[in-house]
Image (cartoon, rainbow, N blue to C red; front, side, top):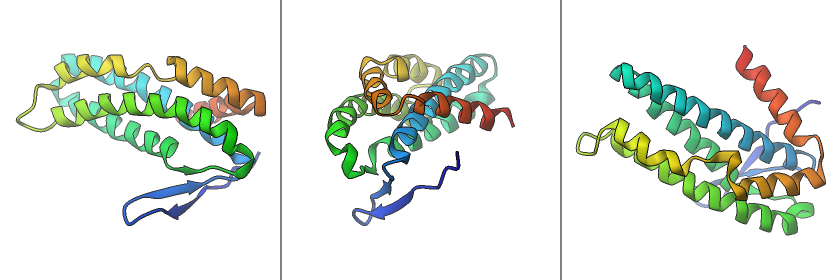
Length: 166
């Protein structure tokens, strides 16, 4: 399957929305959820490494920044007409997860500032906000998408494995 790169559309001076085709929509959402899950797991690995080597804390921050980008990808999309009704429910479920996950990434980014608590403390406080695909809301969104396109999540997983194997 050949994936095309989604286009973007300017909403305001600071906000761009990704324009997604009907065909791309289920795959795109699943890809974002799968990529977030991967970054969440990488965040945990990086956090463990940083416990033994404080220089590795920069990897935690880099991962949090990547997670924020994925959250932006889920939040700022122009939904195809076919999915507008279903997306309201999916988006509501995804938005709850995005809002919660942003609490975690903010804690990590704030810990990078000198006047804030240390990174390990921020990691501990952020972990409850990073349930990712295990989060009930995101499971519900995946279920709705799978009714529309049964192989979207599997293809997103396959794509992720290929990308990170290289």
